[in-house]
Image (tube, rainbow, N blue to C red; front, side, top):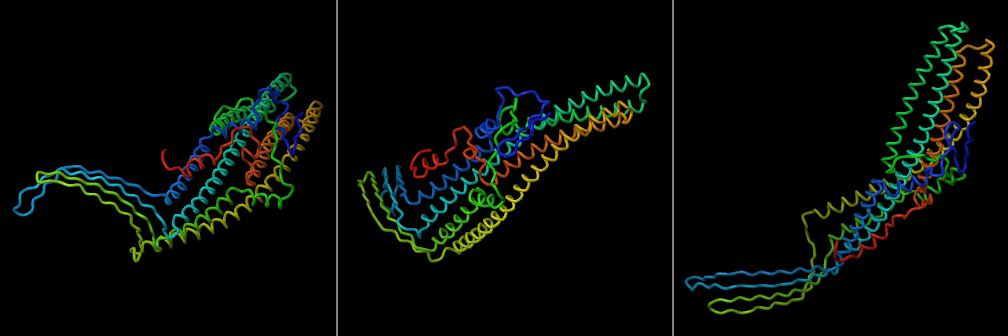
Length: 448
């Protein structure tokens, strides 16, 4: 008899034909932990976030001075008219410091825009984290499902082998016809084909698991805690609006686009900078030499009058990008509402399918027992028994597959709500801290 499905906080995907799990069975949370720590896609997205952090560091650098130094040394020959040739050694050293004071608020707006881009990139990382963990759940459940289907297929093949042997024995004593034997042989051949297909599916599922998780799936424990579901579709919609990383990312990109418009308009405003310089030069020749010192501190005010029209094009471009961001945000909101409804209904549908498949198994077991008894009294044929056995086998396979679909649907709903994260699922691992790199590079002046 199968273990009953537990809906709510736990799900049991183990059937009686599967051997009991050992104490070292790999749990789903251990799989999620391995995927969180190993998956290359997730690591690549973390590196992308760190690259976006550098955009903010580069924007902040617009407040700082720039310092340049130069050094020249050589030999110079000078001849004016019919005068004697003058040859001398020259040496020149200079240093210049330029401190921006005002640039039409361009730097301020660029810093503001890049802060929003950093926050958008963090939400993008969260979305990738949820995608990876959902893929890990799916691959985990695929291995559990395909392992169960393979066990059922092997058991079905064994039953049909025994059935064929019994039919051949009865044929030898004249109780059944050659047609009954052929029917049993045909069903066994189909069962062998199904078992081979199940073996191939399991190998494929294990390969996918290794790609996502980074280790081979050994002795997976099919009993695990499920995410707590909202009580209603309305509650799910509210949670999604508050927690969806895709929607938050779209909102931050819209704000960044608004700042980019203001930053581009700064090119139309005056810029002010303080420039200080020191220069030392010396020269020696046969006719004499001297040293020159030149120091200055000036206020440089630049007022743009006409810049070939490119600055207006950049403003129009920024405005178009901002409008696109607003429309993308509206689309993200609509897609989120659609995803919530789809995920919610998928969970409900698969829950009903599980109940239906469980009832089908019970009915198939009763039917098979009755057909076998009726066959002994000649009321049923061998084909009737084979059909009943096949119906039970198919009901068992459908039940296992529906359990997998239900579990993945529940975790998919959790992802839509923004809850399928290492923190949200309480995975025992050292969580990646996006603030660590951000604080390290935000105001960094020197060094890699």
